[in-house]
Length: 429
Ligand code: NIG
Ligand code: FE
Image (tube, protein in one colour):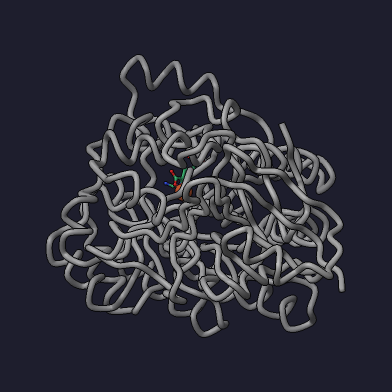
């Protein structure tokens, strides 16, 4: 008998969950399952030919259980620890044309909305993306996904939203679909045609266009198997799409079979937590301005809050109330929000900021970047923990304890030794 991969000799297998939990809410986010080596006894993992985890345990037990097996690859993880691949719950990775010039404006005091209203921000990127060829967009996307893998991310949510017109939104979704086939990272694909109101339109007109033209055109392509879309997103914000417009668009997406996963309560209180509760949304991102009743509504509906600490940091926003959310029983996830405004794709750095600025513990940050991000994307059956039956998505650190991933600020490349996707080594230091 043969298997793809045997990892042996590790000091810790940080499983995160060990009892098939599909999400960890509130106080449960503090408890992570860790299989610790003891004395000279190492711990290890076996990944099958099909790329899924078939065993997690002590090496002596795995050695006798698998004594007649051959392995394509054996990794000696002596002195190392093993974690699940990280899951980035929110990114905008399809674009060309950076916005480094806007960073200088923001440092000089301009707000995100100042720049947006003057035709920069998302509008600037929309112009660049409309002019770009699919191959150009694809090439930059692939470079970014590969860089994300090197940071330890093995699953990423990725949005359209820099087209706003039907042709360009479909172009972006096609580029994402091609990457889904051709790149080892797993993608959860989000249609975000309501990312901004196109220049020259009102929000009402843009909403009508999305409902009457854009969603039907994308649904048609999905029905013909030419596109695959997982989630629907809207930027629900003062001066962008209001709650009623957001509700209509999100419901149309839900009808198309997509999961509701939207931008809410970022710059102004928009009662997006309440809207998420009403729509039983899978996830809402940002939530810097969420209300107490919004938190209660999300606890009730089981909606995951995806927090994006890099954006709050770069835009000098107040931090989302992560402590209050967790203490009240919400499930919190994390995302990098990689986009031309917030150029960061490192989930270890995001986890660090979640600890220092959002007052989460390292355990909570790890849960948020693994099983809870998986839950936000409806993928917790397959990824987010090291458990038998899940994909063989693993990170091997050169340190004996996993906390180094968070502690070693902005130098994850020092401790990430291997990134493994579906049992294959996709990065080694
Ligand atoms: O999540 N807030 C809306 N969307 C993005 C920013 C996109 C952009 O500025 O290009 C976000 O921060
Ligand atoms: Fe975003």
